[in-house]
Image (tube, rainbow, N blue to C red):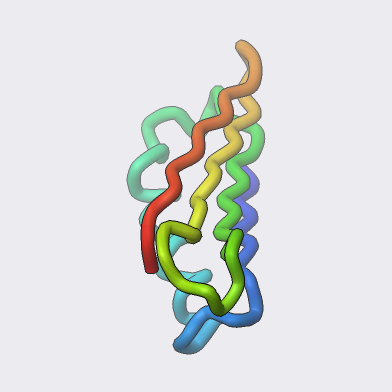
Length: 77
């Protein structure tokens, strides 16, 4: 199972540490499905830039043997 994590450059903190934490959580959560999942891609994006407000989106795209699943959630920083 391949995991990819994409983060915007304007996130506060160590990007490698955040990416590693997200990958570890994904692998632990989906480990029992690893034979059926080919790839999981997690993307964080800041939709409004420095304006603030509800602007952070997390999208999770799962490619499996039985099809694709895409989910997304938007929240404030």
